[in-house]
Image 1 (spheres, rainbow, N blue to C red):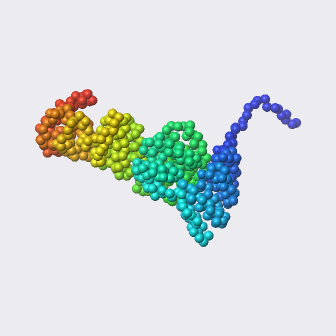
Image 2: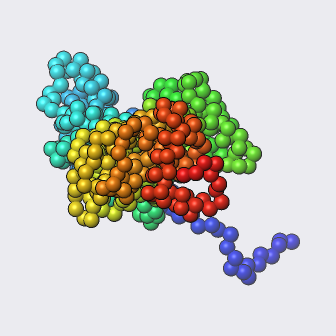
Image 3: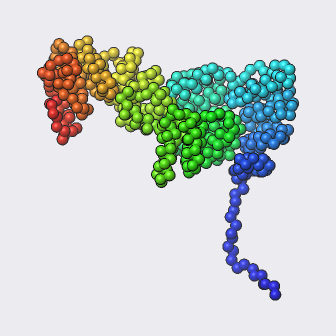
Amino acid sequence: MAKKKHVATTKKRNVINVQMDATFFFERAVHSLDRHRYDRALKYFRRAVEFEPENPVNHCNLAGVLSETGEYEESNRILQHIVEQIDPSMTECYFYMANNYANMENYEAAEEALVYYLEHDSNGHFLEESEEMMELLGYELERPTKLTSIKSREGMFEHDKARTLLEEGKFSEAVRILEKLVKKTPDFMAARNNLALAYYYMGLFDKAMSTIRQVLELEPGNLHALCNLAIFHQHNGEREPLDELLVCLRKTYPMHYDHVFKLATTMGILSEHETAYRLFRRLLKTGESGLDPCLYHYTAVAAYNIGKYAEAEKLWRTVEKLDPGTDVPRYYMEQLKEAVNGNKKQVGYHYHLPFEEQFRAMEISADGIPDQLKRDPLVRSSFFWALRHGDVETKLQVIQAFGMIADSEVEDALREFLLDPAEDEYLKKVAIFVLRSMRAKEPIFVNLDGRETPLQSSPWSPNLPVWKDKWQSVMETALRKMDKRYDMIQQHDLETLWVEFLTRVYPNAPKIGKVEGWAAALEYLTAKMHRRAISYHEVAVRYGISVATVSKNVKVIDVACGLKEKMDAIFPKLSHSEPF
């Protein structure tokens, strides 16, 4: 007997809606490409184009897969459609067309497309490949390529120099070159992008954002600009525009190595670690970078951040073999052990020890900032950011660190700092001291009460009508003896103490006989102010004078400046083995 079928009495549904949009098909296409299923990738990219017909990236992805499968004519038809109907600024399409024509052995058409690319593309991402293709075309056509100019090489020497300066952390010098280059060649997009980065590294966020928006107004699909903009949005906490931009970047499937690398590092910085891992793995598989320890490190970081610990360890072991002199893989494998034990921390993608680790090592070392750290662009950028946006204590530390770096870039930053009317006066005094310690060229200008004032070559002593040579000798003797045993702040405080003493007793300043006696007293008092262990006997020996002379001069300065009362107010429970 057949069973009776009953109509369901409930309206319960077990169907889960899948949102079929361009993103959905794009992700399916990329998934298929990773497995070399080009037929499926083609199908999915075609569907993505149907959903977003005005998005040139979708068309370009489709053309790229068609080229991979040997459908050169169809690939070129799509590339031609992009530059004629959707986005004429995507000049790289002409390079792709040239490749397709060359594969079709249509060398005349390949030459025409390649020449158009070189004469109209301002970025020059495919210059090296273009040179190889020109050799091939010259051989096949039995004549030189008909090329009159290469647009992307306009200002290339200056641009390369600016990029080198950026890599060395010399941001102000790079800005000067790039600003001139952009003014001279407004459509030099790579120069504009690097100018935006230079502004960003210097902490000039508004200028950086304005510059990157100019790039995107001129060339909306510029991948480097889009990546930089995403990082700027993240820094500024602008979540909504960042999320909108991420939708676009996730759907981007760049073909060129530099584009893939830029997108991979950007996605890593934005904590899109799955995407970063996929892109870095793709770069390793292509082998274009050779055995680059940096690339293996970046891939290891991405693997670590998504929980692929075994893969991360394997990659860092490779870094150890490729770069045996570095501490980087050892440090990160220690972090890996912590993560396995349940104490996971997110780690950054830069190929060096974290900033705080380097400074911890610096504090242990008595030699100051190592040369390698002085040149590190990330460290230098952190200093510039802190000088502009940090609190008073942080700015004080940066100014002191600048005294150890002491190059032209630091001098520019400190001079600009002195002209900011909003900055703290004490910080300005320390900055002036550092500039003079660096033998900065006079005059030094400072903004006081809304007016730019040139300083005298003597120490900051606005309430003293004169500054005598003997006074200068006392200070210089003390600073010379203190060098390397006292930091910049302590040396500055010694100078300030000496100026304060002379100001308080003027015009009845004591007659300076032996300068070493007063210099020793200043060192002794400075050490006490900073709670350093010191004795009269120690400084007397160092300066070649008697204990009685040191003691007498210390008491004179102490009485005039009221140092004991100041110290008792700051450290009421602190007992002094010797009086101030």
